[in-house]
Length: 353
Ligand SMILES: Nc1ncnc2c1ncn2[C@@H]1O[C@H](COP(=O)(O)OP(=O)(O)OP(=O)(O)O)[C@@H](O)[C@H]1O
Image (tube, rainbow, N blue to C red; front, side, top):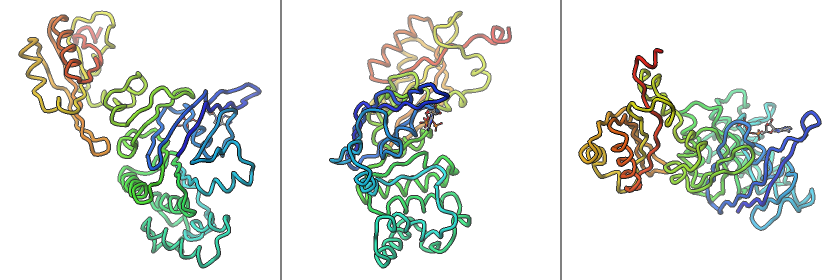
């Protein structure tokens, strides 16, 4: 449904070229929800704005359906944009228009007659649960309600694609969940293809079928969300997946944690083990103790779900001779468990020094 080929975008900032997208090729199936994650400044917003040509790429092509948007004339592009909805972090509603009139705007622009507009707006208000707010003004709505209006407006002309630029970043966690559920329902009911740009990993975990990781204008990792999150291949993706993990460690231990491989690595190590599939049902920990004579101290554990599939994460402090630890890590890898050495723990006296 959406394809980009070697997309580049260079801005000119203070008379100097700033290369923000460096050859991005994406392919997103019809009906899929595709997440794009990356650090601030990675180029996510620029990329999503290039998908509907709000931003014209410097080079490369964009297709939506069978149509190459980058080859269209202005009239063709205006027509194509009716098939691509977009929602924004700050909703972008017209404050002087009522909720119903905000939703009707794209219908007016594409020439719908008044009776059809009225019918379509009523349908959309029902869909997003705001039938009783038709005549309210945006200033009288909560953030979640404003985003519901944004979603209704984006869907007004029955697009086949919905672009979501940080759609829940301005909302509290509870409202975020409600909006994500609405987006999921819309995706399933209308088989709408969605692109989610976000820095919130929970959003991607909950909704996205696939995810691309953008770093300094290039896609460095792409795959099914479950695979990318349970087996990250790059350090950047690992840091997204492990977000918050270090904060869940006991403060005393966190203060004594040093990077793996740094000097004085004689103390216990801290391992982060991710359990997926059949291995989650085997007594892995007791095997490590019995077979390798390790002493294991469980520091933190959590079960998360990605699109309703559970996976476990365990952080343990592993003590024992280096050879036994290495053998245990090899055994974990043999069981197809993903293990990362987060670091080693130095003695309290050492840390004080
Ligand atoms: N219109 C523009 N003119 C000049 N520079 C721009 C323009 N739009 C974006 N940039 C620059 O491009 C880079 C990428 O910005 P972009 O907003 O795409 O990143 P992002 O990954 O969405 O970041 P964030 O998560 O912080 O929104 C930044 O350095 C930004 O300053």
